Amino acid sequence: SAPFSKDLPCDPTGTLITATAPVAVISGHNCAYVPVKIEACNPLYEQLLPIPSLSKSVFVPPLEGRAFSIVRVIAASDGASLSVNGKKIEELPSQGFVDLDRKLEPVWIEANHMIQVMLLSPGFRSGDSVGDPCMITMRGSADYAREQTVITLNDVGWDNYITVIIPPDHDEDVMIDGKPLDESIIKEHDDSDHRWASIKVKPGTHTISSKEPVGVFVH
Image (tube, rainbow, N blue to C red; front, top):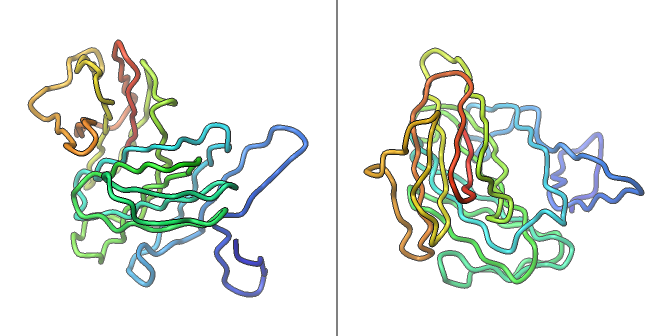
């Protein structure tokens, strides 16, 4: 991690936080450019997963409606040997990180130790002129659930999407607000057998349910 200075720019990514009692940690930036120097900036804040809740494998689908995204992988205190879509790419030291620039292809990340994975969308002037940065904590399959409720925002001129991740060997029995997920929009990742679908939804509260646990995020 970078030495902290209140007077100089620094990146505290990889900082290890310990406490004598349970605490929540929220990380982010008051106005981040993603990638660096690409307008425009946005506030980015996410509650981080504690180390016991991290995973050794995480599937990250592309962001619907965006031309590319950045996947940040952070090693926990043990470091990590990483592979992406079955190919070894990186040896991360303890608390080290790497950014993976992705186009529209999904990413199946595997490691020999626990990793934290964040999905970031780029700024408006990155090429697709769609929106500004956002940051999403990506969970491993152990944290998937059978029923989840999400909230999408009312923002005129932009679209809301729910992305559902279906692990290998799971039935495609997902319900969105009580209606079956359209199987024709489900895509499959050949390298990992994960499937995913992104559904455009109206602003409001939405419920995703299935007989077996699935991953869900909104943007």
